[in-house]
Length: 102
Length: 188
Image 1 (tube, rainbow over the protein chains, first blue to last red):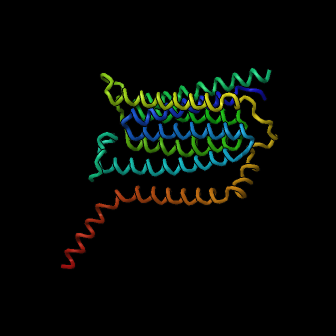
Image 2: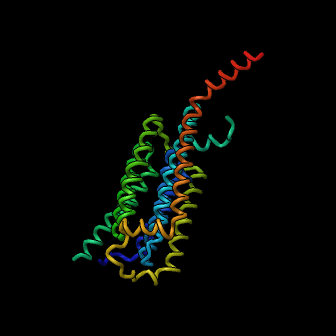
Image 3: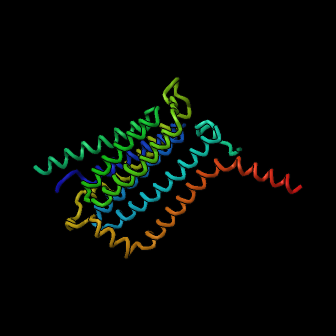
């Protein structure tokens, strides 16, 4: 099956990582910061799977699955933090949550 | 003929992926952002299939686009309507710096890939038909990467405990303080 070069997949992965980094730095809502983090992790996953295909070894795919599990646990903790912040009637804005006083 | 179809699918998936990624960052309503992220994860699964990573593509759709995004949508619906307007008014220095930093990061990655890997990535090796099948990935997980597999289970357990603690703490705190105050009073 002939398709595009693996370099093109790596370019997509770099663009995804850049878009995610832009979202993390630009947006103030912690929910969208978490969503952008997911985009960054998926860009890294795409690079891992591309290199796994390049070497013809499955180790990269195993690593990608481990990254997926870590991302799922990160989402659990992050959403738990957001819900806890919301219950304390604080404003959901990462710029205004800069001090850790109750 | 098959070549053209692969190219067509790749272009469709790549542009859907990048477009929905940009949509996640630019929507002001988090609900729409989460829906766009589901599209992003789905088109990434198509790219994984083109790289013959069938099991990872299936896990991506099941775990990410299924479980994780349902949790996201549930929390967004629970929090109610939180619309922030990132594009209102003149762009601040912080926003300009963020755009510059993200652009520099992306250019850096592209330049490194172009310098280091452009000539050597043109010929992917021929692979067996079973490459990326659940059998092969599972075998690797239980032989070479057994430690990573076990550590992943510990990480998931820690995250589950952390989620329960974070979720229960805020609700029980008022009753705890009342209880402690009551005990102190009765002690005196």
